[in-house]
Length: 372
Image (cartoon, rainbow, N blue to C red):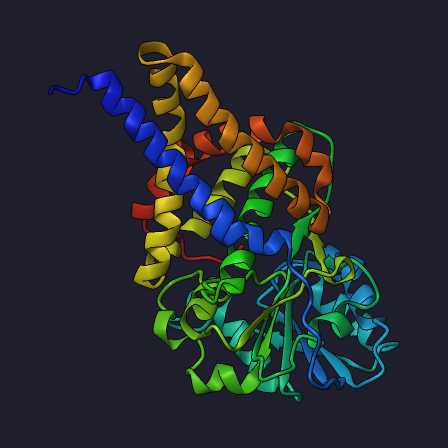
């Protein structure tokens, strides 16, 4: 009995749909129905907040006061590492250190040899930190609320050593802003859901916390010092486990960054970020790759099935995925305060297919040796 090629295409379409549904109903549904666990015990830890900056004078002036004035009843310090800046960052930090005694500026005047990107200034900040609990963010980030430190450190119970937070982007007019925020949402949906499934694979340096002892026990960034990126995702990929990782999705624990405003600067930023994913653990690369691969094939196979096989059967399968996806997205977008994107999620899902075409080349591209 011969099988015609349209049937093969339709079977392939059904297979890719099944793979997609597996991810939504096994992984992503965990974030949709996540409930914050009750700690066996609670206490407030002393915290060292670390901010690395290069030529970020304006951002430091705008956002550091929001960090320095956090409502936190225990001890916390803010270490601002000024990495060879040519602007007025030094003077901004000197000015802020007068009224805020918990601000500790560190001035770097020399580049590190053989250590690219942000890793050297961040390592210096960690080394100088007085406290065991480290909370990391970027100079262009501001906390969503005054309880950011309290909520992030609250995850360090029951033996946890890592807390993954959400680094959101500010809402601005325009389609580019929606694309940026959707891509950020989808990335968070994956790394939060994988962590809840016992497979943590990354965090974002805009909002990330871990123990100082964990950093030194794993020899810091030594495994990938030769790469400009990876101070957040590659480090977490190496040290995170099922038992030592928690997520924090309280809205007041988010951080917000200013999104790129031109397509060219956004593409450069994303291309730089994606050069590190090839160094993830094999299991993580397989799972992430299979999801992207099934998504990439989904739309071409759907189109061919509509045209050459049976339009109503193909449309029924498509509709099933759309409904499941919509249900998961609705709940997760509400949790991550991105619900204004929900009404256009079918369009954004097609955009994500185009996104793969734009950035697949970065998997084979040599990283650019800078961190800005």
